[in-house]
Each structure stands twice: as C-alpha cells, then as structure tokens.
Length: 272
Image 1 (tube, rainbow, N blue to C red):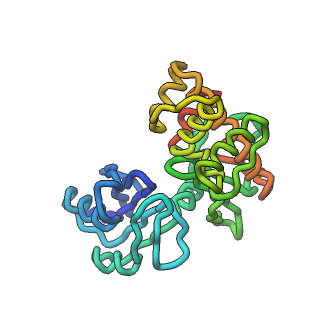
Image 2 (tube, one colour):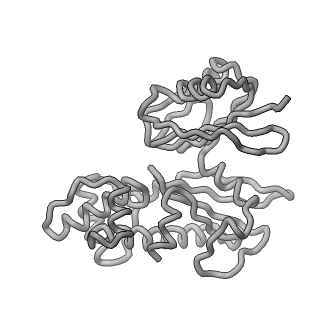
C-alpha cells in the first residue's frame, strides 16, 4: 500500500497542497486554495484531505514567514497557529513547518540544466555558497552552504532590508512611497503589491492619478506594451530585482550561483 505524506507551499495569497509518495518522492494530486476563503491553514488541510479521501500521518508545509519556534504568524496573512496544536488536531505523527525559501533553497541542488535559464555570468562553482530569492506576495530570501558533505539552508528575512535607490528616478519613487507607506523595504517594490506601488509612484510623480490596478494588470499591460507606465514599472522591477540579487551575491560570495524563484520569474525572459 502506498504511503503518502502531505506537502504544501503556503504564501500570502494561496495555499498549494499535494501528496508525496514516501517511497519515491513523486508528487501528485496538487491543488491550490485561496487563503482568503479559509479561517486557518488547518481548515484548508482538512478540506484537502477530505476531498482526496486519504489518511496521512506525516506532513511538511513551507510557509512564507519566519519560523522561530512553535508559534507561527504569517507576515502577509492573518493566519497564526501553534505547530504542536495543529499536529495534534490533525492526528499527525510528524508535522514540519519550514520557511518557504528554505524549501526553495533545498530544491536547488536537485535542479537539472533543463530546469534553468541563465542570465549572464559564468558557470556556478560546485560546492560554493548559493543565494536564492523570489517575489510573490512578498520577497523571499535564503542562502545555501555546503557543510560536511551536505547542503544546509540558511533562512533569513532579507526581503525586509531597506530599499536603496540607485538613480534619480528611483530616488523620486522612494520619496513617493515613503509619503504613502512610511518605511520602504525591498519587499515594498519587489513583490506583487510592490509592482503596483512602482506603477503608482511613477504615475503620481508625474502629477497624474494612477488607475486602480492589480499586479496581474500591470504585468499584462506591460508585456502587451499597451501602457507605458506599466511597462516602466515592470522594467524598473527587473532592474531592482537584478541589483538585489547582485547584493546577495556580494554578501556571501555566492560563487555557487544566484537563483531567482517566485511568481515573477517567468516574466523576466520576456522583459529583458
């Protein structure tokens, strides 16, 4: 009889759950739920298990927030819970809750060449430190180092460092965002909501009134070249995204490579 474990990826917007075959690691029955439709992560897990009529006793869920102990409070969502309590309520023998970019970073050594698109640089140096980051509802960051013949993930909250403008235009955008938001972190511009903030700041700095757009609207209009402001916002997003990765590389000398994941990775080849 096949033994499954529950696996999941939970962000500020969606919860993606699936089953992992414990014998071979194969993932199946993946389903995405809107986090806005459920009062808790436990509620989503219960719905998923009921829908698939499966009993599991092991689970590992990656969540977009710091994991520092038993109590988990999501950064870009209202969900908060005790790991031990949820494990008991679900009747699990084992339940691991890890940072989402800890999960992403641990997948890097498993990637093959056909899974990757390389932007510039040379081939990564085997065994050297690796950086990985990506934008979604927030901005996730992690590093990976090789210690004692195994890879160790170094989780962090690098998305919350200060946004550092590097041009006159970016300085103007910072002032616009500071007036609206107060503190402006990198995540305030390098995320889905951040793309909208960039668009709004570009329009407002020109003395005009921005439309009420969603991240998807900005991306679609930019790629269709139907809105010059959206196009500029996405272009700036990519510039700042690249510079952020360069700073990560300098911080830990990541000669093993800098990897970009997250929702917006697919748009990069189309805009660059």
